[in-house]
Amino acid sequence: MDAPFSCSDLAWDRWDLDTLRKYIHVVVRIARVVVAPEFRGADIGQMLVIHAARFARDRWQVSGYRPYFLEISGDMLKFVPFAERAGMTFVGETEGNLARVAKDMRYLIGRFGENSTGKTKFEEISGILDQQITRMDRSIRLMREEGIDANALVQRLENLSHNKVLRHFALFHGIVSLPKPHYMLGLSNEAAEFLERRVKQLSISNGHVPPDIVISRISAPINLNKLTVEFKSKVRRTYRTHAVQQAFDISPDDIDVTVLKNFSLTIEPGKVVAIIGPSGSGKTSLLRLLANRRNDPAMVVSGNIEFPSNVHAATFDEVRSRKPLIEAIGENDVRSALYLLGLAGLSEPVLYLKRFEELSRGQQYRAMLAKLIASRCNVWIVDEFCANLDHATANIVADNIQKVARRVGATVIVAAPHSDNFLYSLRPDLVVVLSTSWDHSTLLGDTYLKMMANPVEARGSIPRLQLWTSLLNAIKEGTKCATVRRGRRLIKPGLLLLSDGHDTVAVRVTSSTSKWFSHLSNEDARAEGLEDASALKTSIRHIYPDLREHSLVTVVNFERLCKAVVVKEEKDKE
Image (cartoon, rainbow, N blue to C red; front, side, top):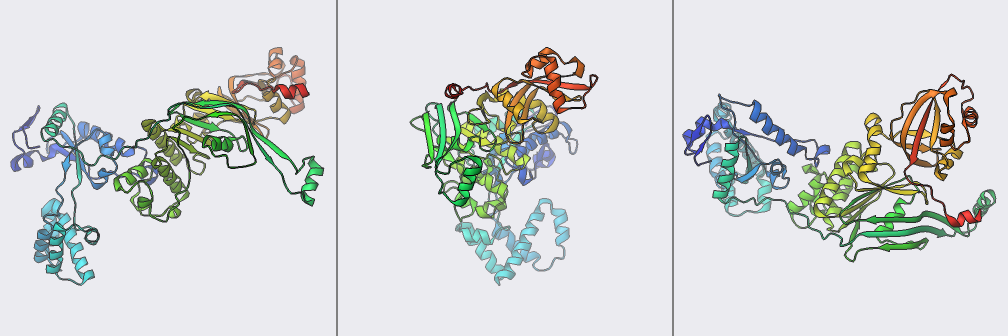
């Protein structure tokens, strides 16, 4: 600040004591930025700083001066760069009190000692020096705990100034203040230009920039071509397994289950892929293959999987360490560990000192994400993504993982049975929808999100309709692309789940029209897979026997997210 500065309503040549007294209020200070733990990692600190700057620029003034500079300092800025992301400039470090703490405590303890007389008045007239009184109180308490007098305390503080020992800093916590990073922001064009010029003139560099995460992006796409995955197993024959065979005609000698059939997919380098499907649809088996884990002898795979030569996949695993998180995550570097934990949404200081087993399930999930990022692998694979997290945490985790992955070039593949609590934050490039072993489709992420948009905004979840199993099978076979419901139904265009209680098919609603039962047409019948309107009315009355000609019904037309699959061999057998 000690350089000529001028703008419309003020100017100075030197930032000396007289200038400081006159213009101190042109600098407005952010004392602290506090964000609730569950929302840390969502860039809220950055947004608060941006809005603080807007507020100060437009609405703040003291002693008739509007502010030209915004400032903040703090130890956390060494590890969480929210101020820099908000556009603030590193201008150096605060002085701290290491060089003068012994002298300060000698004076204060000598003046006040155990007697508090006059201390309150001293605090009132000394402004920011009330922090010194707090340090003095802590020093006196330490003297009692250690059984030492003032001279011994001051001697220790003088030695601390020359010999920085970790255990001494822990002992004098709250008394010693080390230098802290200091950031400033110009609130006018003149102030911004002044800061930029002075930083260049003084060659100020930021020694607290968090370490960047560097990985090697996969060199080519991952290709899956006509992949079929089956599980073949044998069960020891017993009285109970024999009873099952008799009742259901299933032999325990040879159990074959197909979880994926004729599946093809191309995953480009650096893309985010979400695999969505109910339990048993093949998600986990697909992820095991993508992680190149074929250690199950019952798994039989046909088709081709082509991996790039430099692929290094990491899966979502627990932190198997008894050390506190700050020791267990990342390399032997505090800044790196705190940065990784912050990226995963773990920015609560007390959690840094906890072991993995002492965390809540949501906190464990974030720690596993930090471990995944720290692996430096170029393919990140996560099963049951965000399955045990609340809505807010799921969105923060999803947003963090996609932002970090896109910045470093990692390829991300996640799988989950439901996606409406995180998909908008994950912003996948591809969405793979699995329904059954043969029923699957791949959609562009933007297309899938648009299909979900209306129902999610209206109700917070994907709408669902129940159907008879025979009708759901007709949809799978491609002979039925509409359903008729009694009454007026508000079903908006977009994603719709059709279910018989055991199986689910995702469709996209193209139109929804309410009309009198008597007005059902031959076109409506053909969409239902029937010959004419008379056959349609007969079919509907089997479901709603009390319908009359003047009853209101809603015709919902839709299209499959994936086309019907006809397997030639099965057709020949039929």
